[in-house]
Length: 399
Image 1: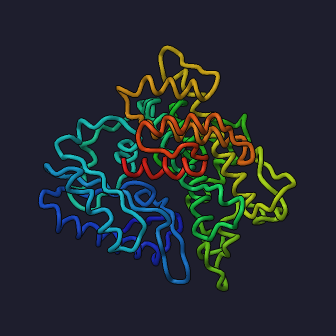
Image 2: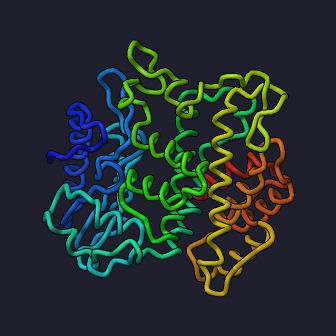
Image 3: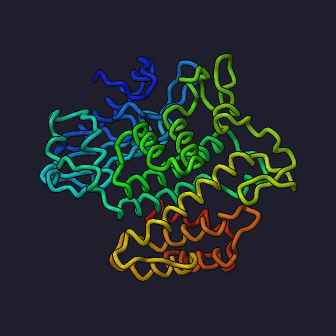
């Protein structure tokens, strides 16, 4: 295995990632007797993985995504191994996605499968196994995939934010996670728009360039995507010579503020005695993370605007709606034959409720979100936005 796993082309980084992957593959071989192949997908398979570095210690920022190709085993056999193998290599999570070997030629054209076919890296098994998957063109990715991606990014945005951040300074891990989920929201919206334009690509860097070309009439969005892509590829600023992690203040390393601030923006500068509303700071009680919350709000609005824009094109009869309650009812009516759940409808409403700013939460949408969420699980009467956010995120992960 000689590939580089990140943009840095650094042997120390590659050595750590390679060791992790060898440990994971070894564990899969031990536990899955009908294992045929293991394929790395996601950023690390395409030299675009996200890592943090503190001194000589290298840590993947998020997780590893692996396709586990077997003769007959499925999710039931693979799922228990995710946490076990993640603990072995010392990372937060590993996504193990099972596929049957005989089904590879018949896989549907999804974003996941498209990325796998064009950008996967075979770690174990026949080196030409990806050639058995259809070589789809980007034009074949449907708007249903864009829609599904947006709902996933709504979850990511809700995961990363808490109303507590208006009252206290997030710790380094919370701040880094907030920025990471914010970047995922921005990139999810831009990816969905590229699918709409039939211009999606499996590389983050290429997608950023294509978005800048296709949407040059909106320089603000182009800049958001550029910054989010830069963060995804180099979250600790290693290539910019800053090195280190969000928590590393040692000589030559990135400080917490440097690694978590929006690029080109002084961290928290001028935010003492400010609060967030309408995506900008106004006079009010102290808001320690005002700049990052502003970015999060911008990402949230970007995702919601993109979903609203795509709906008339996604459905042949031209769906439009005046407000988010109508959108929720529309999805509720479709739910019987779709992947969408009550939880995801509630998450959409919660993000819409706060999109004007955390000081201007739409309580009618919050109550409606609670009603939809209560169809899935018990919800306390009169639950506020933060309570529902926590319950919705928890419900999604347990579904």
